[in-house]
Length: 168
Image 1 (cartoon, one colour):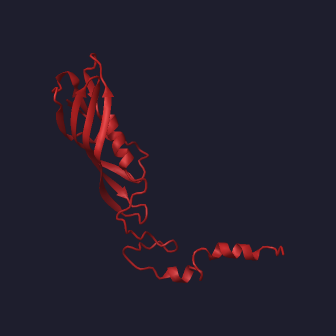
Image 2 (cartoon, one colour):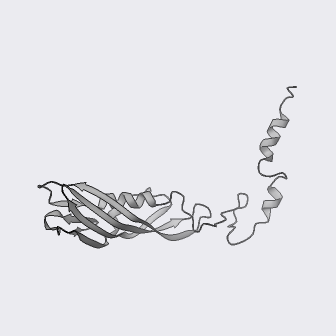
Image 3 (tube, rainbow, N blue to C red):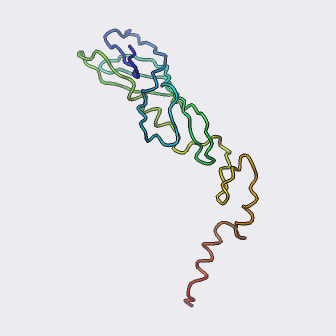
């Protein structure tokens, strides 16, 4: 049984050999909120799961995925990404009194755990120039060589030790 935003299994009607559930919840299943950060959900959680009751446990195995609209943490460009847990597994305690089990909260957690903390539009994204803000994926930056002191990025810290009082 599926209700808006949730995948709910009717335990009393579950085939003793197990059943496959495939579909997509509505977009509210992630309950993302206003402080989503760099990624915004698009659509619902897609799932293909095998559900089986073994003794006093409901075992759920399969794959869950979700599409997101993200902002690249390196260059600031928008991009879409699909995150997936291809080896999703959850278990739920059930008793004779258990009629329904909502699978959605654990699917939501699985999606959040595989979502990158710092999404990038592509692995080789060059990001932005720290000085002028140019997107280095689109255009070369000419200011980088003029602003970087000779000797590399640690030169400024190396000079700190040389400007202090002489202790010898």
